[in-house]
Length: 137
Image 1: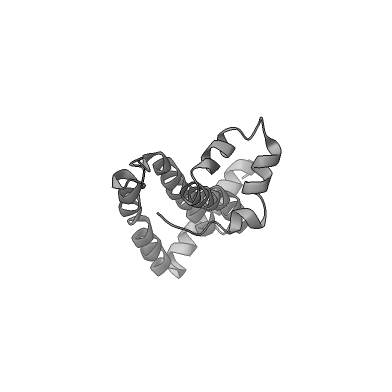
Image 2: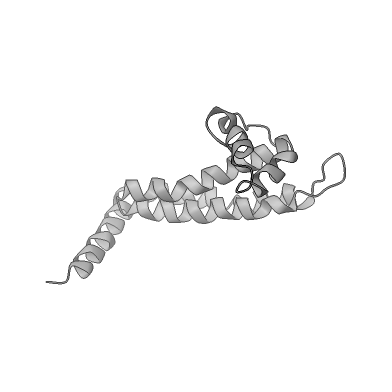
């Protein structure tokens, strides 16, 4: 086989099959985790803050985490760990953004205006300030 793309795709398919044989239980565990995303969407769909505002705008971030988790798992199953982590990172960042927005709704405005007011954005969304977002709704 002279075609590099076909060789690469063949290796990916082989790696996925080996993963299935050697780690089939992890596929079941991930499937169980993935099935919980529907219940994660329920609170932002139905809850209101003390002012009566909906959390529905957070649902795309939960969906982003699910999509990125699925893509990352596929990369991990193909023994491509670097690609897996690169794919998973936006999903993790989405969760951190949810934390910032539920922590203080003004943070959503800072995020929206991040191109106009870079300093305010960096103060809230970088480094330790972002990692402190742990409050849930």
